[in-house]
Image (cartoon, rainbow, N blue to C red; front, side, top):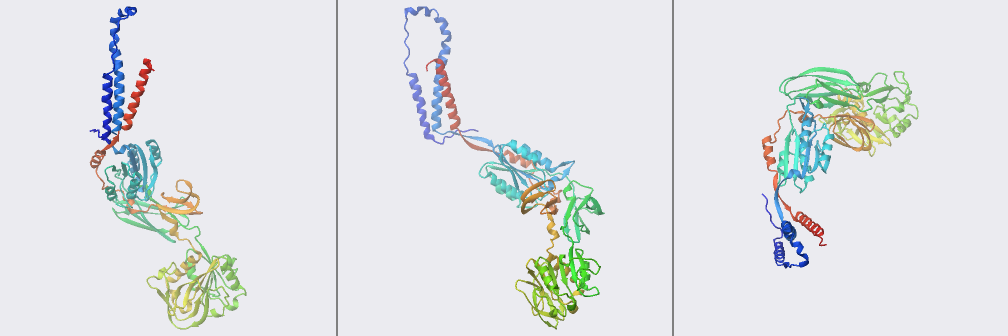
Length: 621
């Protein structure tokens, strides 16, 4: 239905000009007929001339109608006419939200959910188009462009290996549209693993001039995949879930450098989880499930370890028999232990030559004063200042050892009374004592004052520091004040763990967890060339939205999906049915006020141009 309201009704008085024009036209003088003898011969052709009188009158009347319409049009413009017409909001602004999460890679009969979403998205492009990719964090790849550019952009989009955040993508679409009318179309399987509830957001977005359309592209794909990965220094545990209603048989392979180093076969019952533990290989390795199923992205997981896997430790001791400390250090898989007996520090007990001051850590443990070469402690202090790591252990004659400035505590007299040894603070070294902070006892210990700026990890009942850590210019020094001969700590299971943690802490060994990440993480790095699983790019802000190995900062990082919700691809969508979608689209037509001033002005211009051409041809100008 079309109506013609006027925004300036008083302008209709200008139509009086039409009446004036008609009156003037009717009152114009009529020509008089006179017979001129010299023209008598023309009257002979009077009968023939009457044949054209009709056309002459028509042409005369045509000029009248042109002028009449021009005047009427100008009068209407003064009244500012407008028309209410029905139109489709989708023709003006279209925002496409395309789910590119991992679950969209699920295939049925060789066709993925993403393929179907892409096909449907290309059909609804119109007017000005914007495209948002719904990853774990929504990403705008196109804003307010024509359909041709939008089609080209869609053809380049690929599914990623992240979780889904449709709720925030809808809010981002709202910001793009602003006050403009338009359509928001979401193409997804609606496995929303992150962000606000999409139905709540949709209800908030629904308005008179915006249309939110959900297009479900889910299929009947089935999946058994890796849902959890616990990577530790020595072993890795992988969890596999069967999301199907029937049992699944899978082979788990651990692959390194293209070779299978271990494999096992497991039967997983319906909707059940199985786990598998294996030794963590050094470098880069891969976990594979075979045979592959409808969602391949969670059939593979990668594992990465820090570049430096061995810490060189030099134990300086005059004990002829192996001590509990030596056994503890030998049991650590990431420690390469060498033992020397003073005064010779360059020949190990295995008769191997080494440079003592090129070791990552030096431990002074139960050494004899008369076996120490003069200047040894000065060399140890210099070693620490230049970036080395030195650990000094308490012993019976500690006061007699001239450790110079190598130590970070001022040793006082020996205290011969029993005491509990309790941690002062829970940190990377003392985390194993969180439940039982007083982890051992000692019958004797040395009184000591820690230097300013050091950290006391553990102390006696009287707050005498027993385990102290501090910096020494570029290096680090630790004081181990628990004398193993007067304490049972050396016999506890926590003893080798403590030494391993202390050495790794001092060396600054990188945590293996920092090398094994989940997809969707954004890292800020120094601008550099980064190698991703599929390409290379130069960037300072890296979005890890692909599963695989990334290389930057001269290191390799493993990135995996690892998300149970995203892998559960057989969940049924809760969005509206196709019938509800059709009803929604039928309501997309709305009335809109269209101003007719410009179209009428254009018509008036055409009429006036036609009048000019007509009188020009007639010869009046």
